[in-house]
Length: 249
Length: 249
DNA sequence: CCATCTTTGTGCACGCGTTCACAAAGACAT
DNA sequence: ATGTCTTTGTGAACGCGTGCACAAAGATGG
Ligand SMILES: NC(=O)c1ccc[n+]([C@@H]2O[C@H](COP(=O)([O-])OP(=O)(O)OC[C@H]3O[C@@H](n4cnc5c(N)ncnc54)[C@H](O)[C@@H]3O)[C@@H](O)[C@H]2O)c1
Ligand SMILES: NC(=O)c1ccc[n+]([C@@H]2O[C@H](COP(=O)([O-])OP(=O)(O)OC[C@H]3O[C@@H](n4cnc5c(N)ncnc54)[C@H](O)[C@@H]3O)[C@@H](O)[C@H]2O)c1
Image (cartoon, rainbow over all chains, first blue to last red; front, side, top):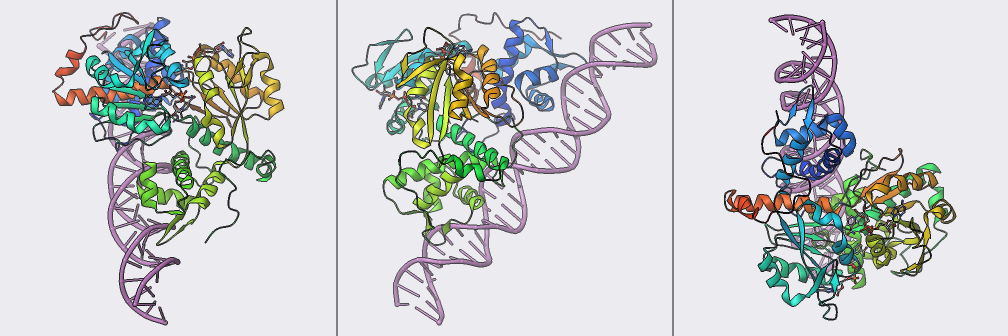
C-alpha cells in the first residue's frame, strides 16, 4: 500500500479487523458504481471481482458488519452502500483542512473526489504571507497564524499536511494542539504524535522504490542477474557522493 | 498509510518478505538524513526510532539482507545506505513516464523528491491535444499517440497513471502492451493486469475514509455514541440520493 | 409441500509478520 | 589476556489475516 499504516499497533476496533476497514472503501466504490447503474443486488463473487479481491475474503469482511446478505441471491446494493457508509462514518460531515498549498496541496484542493464522500475542505492554510488571500479551488488561502482559530471554529478533526518535510512536524504539533486527531501526511517524514491521534501517510517515493525492487528482481530472474549490471550504464550524477565499494569492518 | 498493495499474492521474493521491502525505503530515508549529518554509525535502537518502527523488527529486517552490523557498535551508516540502495535497485537509473498531466500529474512532475533516488521523469503524456507541447517542470507534454514510441525509446519500465478513473484501464493496457511492467496508479479504479506486472495504488479517498472510521470510533467512545448523531447536524447536499432507512429483506 | 439449486456465513488450518528474550559476538579498558 | 559492557542476530511463541471447503439458509419451480 501506497498505502501507509497507522502508528498505533492496529487496535482491533469494535471487532472489525484493521485489514477489513482498509477494504471497506474499496467495496463502497464498487457498490456506488453498481448503484449508479441501478443494479439491485450483487453476489459476493461479482462484487469481489469488481473490487479486486477474493470472494471468500469479501464475505468474511461483510460478516464482521453483520448478516446483510440473502443466501441464494446476494447483497442488496443500496442497503450495503448505506451500511458501509455508516460503518465508515461517511453519513456525517467531516471538515478537513489542507496545510501547505504548493504544487501538491493545490492539486488536492482541486480534487473533486474529496467532497464526494462527506469530506469537505474547510480551509486552505499556508505559511507564505504572499499567498494569503489568493483563491484556490474557490477558497481563499489563509495564513498559518489563523490555523488554531480555523480548526476551532470549524470543528475540524482531520488535517492534511502537504508542506515540505522540514515543516511537517511543527505543523503536525500545532494541528494536534488545536484539536485535530487524524492526520494524513504527504511529507516524507515520520511524524510523532500523542496517543489517540491517528496518522496515515502517503509517500510517492516509497511506492516507487517498492516497484523498483520488484522490477529489479524481474530483470534479474529473466537473464540471470546479468541485465542488472548492464542497465547501470546510465549513471546518475552523484547525489550522495560515491558509494563505498568495500565493507568497512 | 496510505499505501496500496500489490495484486500479486505477495510472492516472497528472494527470501525478503514483502513487509520488509516496504520498510526498506523508510530506513533508507532515515539513514540518508544521518549520512548528511556525517554520523558514522547508528544503533538499531536509534535508527528504529528515526524510522518510526520497533528495533527488533528493524534488526530482523536487516537480517534478511545479511549481517551488516557490528555487535556492541551498531551499523555503519554509509555502508548500510549502499546495501539498501542496491537491494532496492536504486543504484540503477529508472526512467518513468507520467500519463495524465492535470492537477495531480503536474504536481508529480514538479516534485523534486522524484529524481532524488534514481527515478528520472522520461516524459509527460496527455491525451489533450491542446496541451501538447506545453512545458511542465521543464519537460514538454507529449501526446498519447507517442506513448508506445516513448516507452520503447527510453526503455521505460515504470509508469505513473494520473488520468481520470475512466481512462485508467485503457492507459494501463497501452502501457503494459508497450512494455511497462510496474504501474503506480493514482486513479480510483481497480486495474487488471497480466501476470508479471506489478500495480501499486495511491488513493487519497481511501485514506481519508479509514481516518474517518477511526475518528468516528473515537467520538463514539468518548461520549457513548451520542456525539456521532449530534455531529450529523451539518447534512451534505444529497449526492447519492437518500439512503434507505429500513432493511429491504 | 417438497426438491433442487444458488449463494451466504463461518469453522478450520495454514502461513506470514511481529515481538520477546537471550545467547553470542565483538569492542574496549585494564 | 581477561573481564565487562554493549548491541546484534535469531529461535521461538503468538496473533492476525487469508483462503478452503462446506453446512445451512433461502429462493425458485413444479
Ligand atoms: N508534489 C508531489 O507530487 C509530491 C509527491 C509526494 C510527496 N510530496 C511532498 O508533499 C509536500 C509538498 O510538496 P509540494 O510539491 O507541494 O511542495 P511545494 O514547495 O510546492 O509546496 C509547499 C507549500 O508549503 C508551504 N509551507 C511551508 N512551510 C509551511 C508551514 N510551516 N506551514 C504552512 N505551510 C507551509 C509553502 O509556502 C508552500 O506553499 C512535500 O513534503 C513533498 O515532499 C509531494
Ligand atoms: N488531484 C488530486 O489531488 C487527486 C487525489 C487523488 C486522486 N486523484 C486522481 O488522480 C487522477 C487525476 O486527477 P486530477 O485532479 O489531476 O485530474 P485532471 O482532470 O486535472 O487531470 C486529468 C488529466 O488526464 C488527461 N487525460 C484524460 N484522459 C486521458 C488519456 N486517455 N490518456 C492520457 N491522458 C488523459 C486529461 O487531459 C487531464 O489533463 C484522477 O483519477 C483523480 O481521481 C487526484
